[in-house]
Each structure stands twice: as C-alpha cells, then as structure tokens.
Length: 310
Image (cartoon, one colour):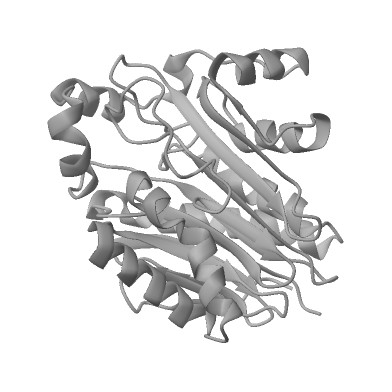
C-alpha cells in the first residue's frame, strides 16, 4: 500500500505577504513527514515529524511563530493520535515549549493520561528533559507589534480571525504502508486570548481524530466553533455513512458555518490512501505527498502538482 501524508498550515485570510512562505513551509513539512514514511517509519512518526517542521517555521502559529495571549505570554496546545490503537496524547496552555507536538507524544507514550495542561504539562516536560525556551525566541517582531495594537480580547479575537491579522493551527495526517493512520495538530492559539484559554487543537475529536476503521483528520479554524460541532469526529461520521472524504469535509464545514457561523478547514486521509484538503476560509496552505508526487495549494479549488526527486 502506498503511504500518503497531508499537512496544513492553517485556514485563515492569509495575506499576500505570507502566501509564498506559507506554501513553501507546508511543502517542506510534507516532504519531511513523507521521508519518514519512505524510510519505513510509522504514520505516527511521520505526522510528528511534519508538525515539528511546521512548529519550527515562524510563518505559522505553533511553536516558533506562536501568537501572544492577553498577558503577552506564549501558551501552546497540541495533540497526536494513533489510529491503530486509538492511543493519544495532548497538552494545553503550555508555556514556551518549542515543539508541543513532541510533548503530546510523550504524554501518550510515557503517562497513563491523555491530556496534561498548564503547570502540570510544564512540570512533566521538565521531568523528561524538555526545556522551556524564552518567549523572545518563539515570538516574531511582527507578532509583537500586532499584539500591542490590539489587547482587547472581547473585541479582538473574532475580528482578528476574520481579518488578515490572524494566524492559525498547523496539522498533519498520514497513512503508512501497513494501512495505519495517524493525526497531529498544534497551535499557539488566537492572539489576545484569555490566559488559560484552550481551543480545539488538543481536544480529541475536535482538533483531530484518527481511527484505522475510518481515517485520520486534522482541523483548523476558529477553535470555539470547531469545539461546538466536534468537527474532526463529525467528518469521520459522514465518511462512516459512505460519503467521500471531500464531501464529508464539505458537509461538516458547512454545518459548522450554518450552526455556529464558524469558518475553518480540514485535511483527511483514509486507510486506503485517499485524501482531501478542504476549507471555507479565504485561504488555507496545504500540501500532500502520494504516489503521484507532491500536491499543494493555497486558494480555493487550487491543486498544483510537482514531481518529487527520485
């Protein structure tokens, strides 16, 4: 079975100044994750590698490049899930961790819990040798300037999300040569969020879900809206009813728009290697690697292809 990996760099109104860097970033991450699959690695290893690449890229709102909360702090969230066993791990409201997806993987692998939050997650990170890093090393100068412009959460978050000032979540889904699927999602949240706010990204069934019986999903968009409709699980529900991956994603995103006026996007992969990247925002940077090469896009209905080097 051919292995497939899909990544997204967030669904939002990506401005032209960020467009090229966003597309380049997801292409690099897709190649990083797929190289793990090519070398015999698992879908779980591949999505972690892909999301780490996105977290290390300051273009995206996760790890390096994270936005600031109302107090000017970095609080990050992440999750990872294994479709073979339904094992999963997540962290939320973690201070100044450069690669929260790997901390989420450690929660899955090294604890009896699914989610650790805030101080507890940071204490766990310290106990296994994952050090915190200063806010200055994670936050770009552009983010610092934008944060200072708008410190009012109540009037700022939704306006920011629907403008060209907001960043958003990153994620990856994969199926390996054994037919196992996995997902991972990571975020720095929404600029000026209240201290301790948790969005959809670390919540199993909302920000992501993976099950070998159906497929793997990673979601992106306005977190509160995604949480209200448990978007990842809703997409898989439609797939279980026999709908295609693309139709299941479109129906679920449309339901979220109709029911709670939320916009977003999702990437999906099936155990058989089918995949889809769908969004209702102005743009979403995404990339996928399958047996036909590297696919990528940014604008609605855009689906570009280039061959990978042999």
